[in-house]
Image (tube, rainbow, N blue to C red; front, side, top):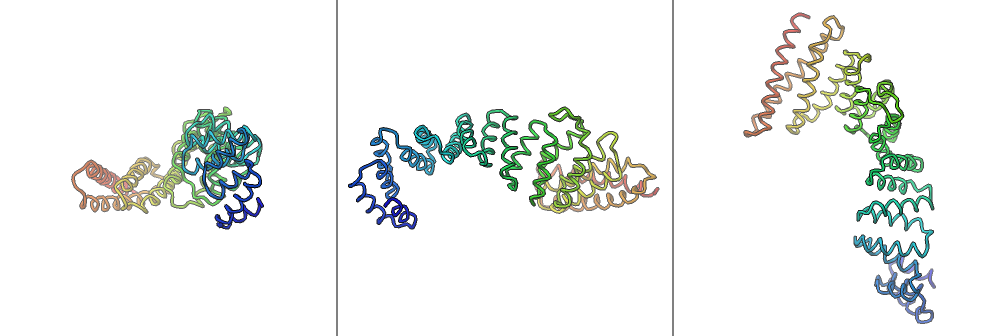
Length: 364
């Protein structure tokens, strides 16, 4: 009869299910049938009756009440009921997981750590459980524990790019450069067009500033691996100005690793990627102008005998002319404001740079 009631509820035939449940309850007034009647009627008082009738030992009654309160977003009451259910029956990995999610929602991060710890202890292949445990540890400031949990999560959710994203962020927080590189490559391998400016900034600053990794290795020793990674990523994400600019920095700002010509090429690619949205907003225009200003500093200081010098002058001249035209067009539709003044300054700077570039072009 219990299976028949479940089948009726599953097919939406609640009245027929309720009729059977009431009949069985008359014959067998046990906590189980009060819970089943609660399932068919969605009347929470039947679960409460089952709890009382069982002398507070019905795990099923508290579990059902816990899910009810969770669904109506009464998270404090939901967690209370779930924990009572788990006291009666500890071996409920799914309920431990939901209790952890409830604790995160409150938030009660210590309770979340306990709940997710039990969830993965009972089911150590629960990748989402490991990831959520990492999140709870992270909120409590346990960054290395969080990183280890996220690492375990990637083992069980190897093809889930969001899990890898959690892992890469935790690795950056504890300065684990090698893990960031591994995670970045995997995210790209999974087909996700990843170019998070914070992660790119972490990798570049670690190498440029020779910041030691968590294992003590100097940041500059990761130069070739970071370059290989970003070159690989650029084959999948071709229009990210953050990515191209990061590559440029690795060839322009790392002592002993300079390749000015190649670095400038990457800066020009960064500008062209950013220029795809140059007319969308003032911020996008100013981003393009900022990249052009950095490019100007390197081109104007490039070795005049370099085989790329003339090409770079021509490319930058074209870029600056476009910026001047686009800047004037933006100003025509703007009222006096801080943004308008920023555009004026960008156009003025572009004109000065263009004059310098044109003078250099006369002697090449």
